[in-house]
Every structure is written in C-alpha cells, then in structure tokens.
Image (cartoon, rainbow, N blue to C red; front, side, top):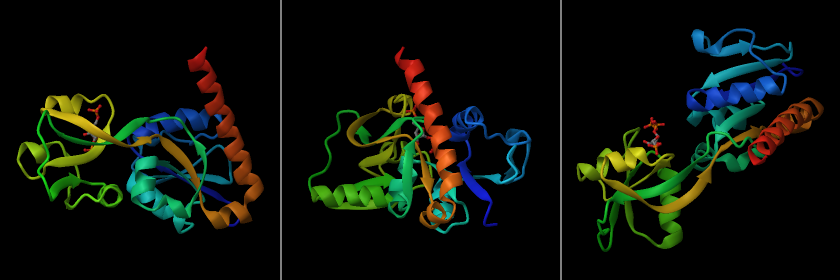
Length: 217
Ligand code: PRP
C-alpha cells in the first residue's frame, strides 16, 4: 500500500462540491459514486483510491493513517481533533457558520444554561473560554427542536441560509467559527509520500485559486 494514496471524502452535500473540484484537478472516480453502494472507489489514477464516508469519521481515518488525505468540514475538525492533522488547503467549499442560537428575543437564564448540540467538544470549549456554566445535551440532528420543546436554552449548530432557525422561531446569537471544507493530510503520510501528496495538494490549490478568481472577476 506504500505507493497508494487513499483519500477519504465526506459524503452528502460536501461530496457534491468536492467531486467537481477533484475532477478539475485531474482526479475522477471511474464509476458514478452516487449510483453505487460501494464505499471505496478506484480513480483514473492507478495509485489513487477514494473512500466515501461520514464527515465525522474523516478525521479519524486520516489521523490513524487508514486514509492519507481527507476532505473534512472545519466543524468536524474542531469537534474531532483536527489538531493532529496537517491542514494544507482551505477548499473554499461548503461554507457556513458555526453559531449559538436561541429562541427569538429570549433571554438566557442567569447561571447554568442548557445547550443542545452535536458539537459537544466545541460547545464545552466555547463555554469554558467564557466561564459559562453549562449542561451540554448531545443530540444527533434537528437541534432547532430542542429550545422549542424546552429541552435546552440554546443550541450550537451550523447556520447556512438561516432558514431552519427562522422557520423554528429562533435567531443566531454568537459566531463560534466560520466553516468551510479543508484538505487534511496524515502526518506520517506527508513524510513518506511527500512528492505525490504535494502534487495533489498543488493541483487542488490551483483549482481553488482559479475558482476564487472567477468569483472575483
Ligand atoms: C444543517 C444544520 C441546520 C441546517 C442549517 O442540517 O444542522 O439544521 O443545516 O441550514 P440553513 O441555515 O440553510 O437552514 P443538515 O441539513 O445538514 O442536517 P443535520 O441535522 O443532519 O445536520
């Protein structure tokens, strides 16, 4: 496997924006990923394979070297320990914001607050930095329901258009981080397969720069 490059991609919405970027950089799966139940795909390069997995698992695959390279949302890196990985490139796709949110106009209780989120580590760190006492309630989706049903006073979640918050009587409060998808690389792979990985990073970097220039002009 030493001459193989394994790239872990985040499935779902991020994948739809990732594949055209990779295609423009000259890396394409040889079959239609959306029409297959496979999890590992050959590409037009004999030495490059793609994994298609959940975003929350990408940092783990790359950290342990089961994948050399990953495409991961910054939210997942903040939550699941991206600090162990090289992050050579902001792919500038799947951009959104990680925010706190609460019911419109509602004051937060004095003292301990209840925060519902799937970003438990991020929420804990955010509270710790501000000396906020909080009970963190782990949810796996539909965080916006928690304040509505009085399960929580506040949520920590991804905000894109803000439509989900609005539709549920909520408003964004504090910005925790601007999010986009990042290219991450396993530290040992970066040393052992440096030339090939650098080639891939450079090709993707050129594509990202070109698409930024297109937007600016
Ligand atoms: C995300 C997020 C919000 C919504 C925000 O959910 O958790 O619910 O998108 O987008 P908006 O600001 O444009 O309304 P997603 O649909 O990814 O599903 P999830 O609950 O599984 O995270």
